[in-house]
Length: 462
Ligand SMILES: Cc1cc2nc3c(=O)[nH]c(=O)nc-3n(C[C@H](O)[C@H](O)[C@H](O)COP(=O)(O)OP(=O)(O)OC[C@H]3O[C@@H](n4cnc5c(N)ncnc54)[C@H](O)[C@@H]3O)c2cc1C
Image (tube, rainbow, N blue to C red):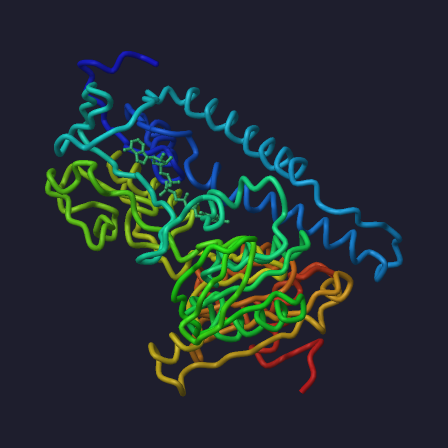
């Protein structure tokens, strides 16, 4: 590391997760001098405790399902069980390789990487272990950590968060997952595939409650078929330790016995005792508040990623980091349209969406001004080859562009790339309908849904 004493950087970034490192890479690319401060591992939650390790587990889970269910494809295999140390070694190797690559990338862009716990010491200063880093601008990117509920203590053993769940040495026999959002559904899916009995407890009326209700219901149907249990509209009231694990108590009087309780009730911002308030940075329930260009109320300070009240997704962090770097370099970046950000739950089946839900569209445009079409994957050749069920649902402003795409089914996360182009380019159904999709692919379902909405359905009844 170069000695930063006496240097005034163009930008000092506090936190080296998705938001912070993306900002650092883009700023350096634009010729700015950058210091990046990280107390843990470069890459943050996404690389070490989030996206990457969970998706490795989900891939191992898919292989377990395929080997268990291979006979329906005429392939004889025997499923001997899950070797958790082996799964962990695979997962950790994926993370280690990406980590090494990222460290090399940061080095190659000549970013001054500072290891240690940083603290905002003023509008242009970050202090790390007594060392002061001065910047023309400071970017706060300290991310988030798992939350719990009042009175629910995480012990890391029987009552765990996603951080602990990623390091389990064996597969539990029974698990209760508190929270039916993305993280809860992904772990429920993994553990079921690994052979555990799983029950999800969700206080709201549906799983993945931020999704279009049709997607939530389809996921619930699929989970029911997979014998993943769930209690919807059910509030947690307490947890007791038992001889074999935990007893989870619900306000509706039900008691669920399990080896483990995974608490997946959301993530809270890391903003306490970091000097933010002393520097005059405004926060709301711990989240740093920003304008639509990620600038805080202090002109020299920006904030990105899970620390600000936008979607808690790695690619949102990347986009915000890039936006801030470009703004600080004097470019004129456009604000992010958060509705246009793709969202994927990587469970089996997957849930993917971009744009707004039918309910939101009806609120926004009026119920009579919204049209929808749902194309069932039963009509899609590749989906039948994969033996998956689900749909592509389109929401359209009448006589206007497509404003929402909602999909459920194995591998539909990959279809969201086209869906996001459709939404963000404000495409009309007939414009997409004339694009030719390769056969047999699941992307055809996106094409077919648009053909139906344009009034010329091909492989569809009615
Ligand atoms: C289980 C799980 C699965 C997920 N799956 C996905 C997914 O599939 N797709 C997706 O898009 N998103 C996913 N996410 C969300 C994604 O991980 C986050 O949105 C993303 O990591 C946020 O990036 P960030 O830079 O804001 O924060 P973080 O990644 O949390 O990074 C913040 C960094 O700041 C550092 N830091 C904090 N305080 C200090 C300090 N005082 N001094 C120095 N450094 C400090 C931390 O060590 C950390 O490295 C998942 C999250 C979890 C938990």
